[in-house]
Structure formats: structure tokens, C-alpha cells
Length: 440
Image (cartoon, rainbow, N blue to C red; front, top):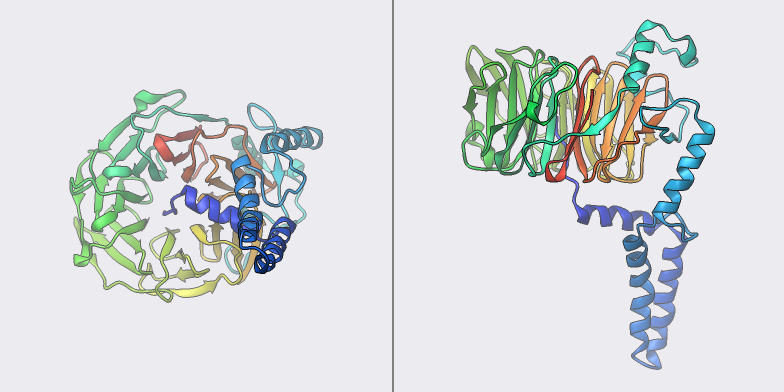
């Protein structure tokens, strides 16, 4: 699993992109033209021309006013109004209070997507759901809360294993582990597994993923940093510079059982490096470029064969041979830059973008779904549920029977990645300055 970083510069660029589509921008541009014309009479009109164009977006950005709002309403007022509307229209709530539902389509939830040849019941009533669906709805009632962990370093990726253990990676080669716990558990359940990466060089780590049972964990990052950790013993093995490549690895995906693992690494040159771990040794193929060389931003494997990756040029690519080859399956016309990808199997793929939209793929068709306004940096899937997190510290949930909901708990810093175990018993989002938010 891999995610793009959330950076303040990107936030402003995303803001300005939306601002240029508003009437305020049109008026500002007209002012720039008008005052610019008057410079033939006096050169100081150039000051007014520049001010009329530059000042409005800066003021709106600093005030936190979304560019699509033109009535001067502040973010605080907007949130209060949203909460009032949410209370009046929703009968259900998550632990701690109601949360806003936001969806721009009546399309079925991404959790409804089935492999080729399957079918969907588009008219199912949540009240008539069977035991499995009722159990999934019960999972939604679990509360999210901030967790104290022994670091203030930015965490860039996270993986919750089938056994319920958590592994997160980030700045300076940090690897953080949250042991599988039953019931309570707090800061004492989190420990630093590695302080300075697999090669003890302190290189930034960007990706982490685990084998099917969670017995082995792979990590990857800058300057070719790659390593494998054994969950039970804590032993780690350094595989830095695989195939003599020292590129910055922006993400890693793992498929298959321990000792029979497929590993995919992605970089900023648009290349995917495939590794296969067998009987204590790993072999690496020659790297392949699924697209035209644009930086890859996300990669995910559903198993040892099926997976997807996405790039920063609207490219989404599918593999059915464990990363030996890829076919482009989309995505044309995305409004924002693709951030990350999640999948459960063939024909089931979601990609998120920095404009707050998640694009759902099924049966060769792409459906955009508005989730929020900020960059959706993290995306996680399990049967019947999708979880997303954004650069503003907001977490969104969606089950097969419902819309996207933003949960009440909000992280104090930007969130970068999220992961959930197969049963939904534990979900974890991580981000800047050691931010960790858990649901269990």
C-alpha cells in the first residue's frame, strides 16, 4: 500500500485550482485587465491591477473559506450549519455523535463491486440486511480515538495485519509497531521496532505491507531502502538496493503467504520492480513501466496475482500476473492528481485524488464519488467497507448499504494513510507529527 504525502503547498495548489473556477476569480481577472489597460495613463495602475488579482485568493485561503463559497461564510460557520443539517436529517449516528453524509451519486457503494460475472442488488434495504451486513453496520458504531505513540515523527504509511497487529513507517527510517491487543490497550502497546531503517541509514520510509497472514512485513523508502521483518521474532533483513537500484521507493505492495511472497515496489520514474521471496531468498525481475514514465503514486495487491497501481497522470494499471505485466484500465478526465489505490480483487479498484474525489472501477466503468474537499491521501478496503482519510485530518467511512460518512473524531494533523484488517475489528490512520487515530 502506498500513499502520497500531504503538503501545505499542495493544499494551496488544490485550493487555487478550485478558486480559478469561481466567479470571484473571473472578477479578479477582469480587474487585472482593466487596471492593466489604465497603465497607459499612469504606471501606478499596475499596483492596483496586481492587487486586484492576487489579494482575493490569499485572503480566502488564509480565512479558510472554500473557494466554492461566495457568501463570506467562515469554515466554522459552515461546519456548524452542516452539523445542524446532519442532526435534522440523520436518524443514525456513530459513537460520540452524528456525522455528515456526503454523496453526489446514487451509485452503489464500492464495497458492492463484485468480480466479473457477479451481480449487485441495487435496491437492498439496510433494514432488511442479513447477519453479515448487520455485523458490518455494527462495526461502524466502533469509535475512533487518538492514540499516544512513542514518536513525533511523521508517519507515511500503515498496515493492519490479519492478526490485528499494526506496523507504521515514516521519517528517518522509523518503523512503529502496535501489537495485537484484545479490549483496551494504549500507548504501552506501541513500540519502536526500527529507529533508522533496514540498512541503519535513517532513510525516509514511504511504504509498508504484509503477507496474507501478517507473518512477514515489507518496508520501503528512499535511496533504495527495502527490508523484511518477521512479526513473531522481530528479526529484520536488509534488502536495500534491490537489483542494484537505489531509487526512492514511493510504495510497496505484498501478495501471497509468508515464504511465498510477491513484492511490488514503485518509484518516481513510473517503474514497478517485482520481487519473489521463496525459501528465505528473494529474486528481482527487471523493472517495468506500466505507463509513460509518470511518477507512480499508489500500488496494491489483492493476492499474489491481481493488483493495481496508479500514477500522477491519470493512469491506472491492472496486473493479473503478479506485476510481471500491466494493462491500462483508466482513468481519463480525473479532476485532481491521483493519490493512492485500494483493491479486493479483479475488477475491484478504487483510486483517490487530491481534489477530494474517489474513483470507483467496476466492469470497465469508472464512477467518481465526491468524498470531501481536501486531498484523499489514504484509502483502505475490506469486504463491505471502505475507509478514507484526508489532508485535513478527517476520516470517512462507507459500507455497502450507506453513503460516505465523515466520523466525528478529527485528527489534530494531516492524515496520510489508513489501513483496516479483514474483519474490521481494527482500523488505524496515521499522519504528520506522529499522529495515530484508531478504531477498535
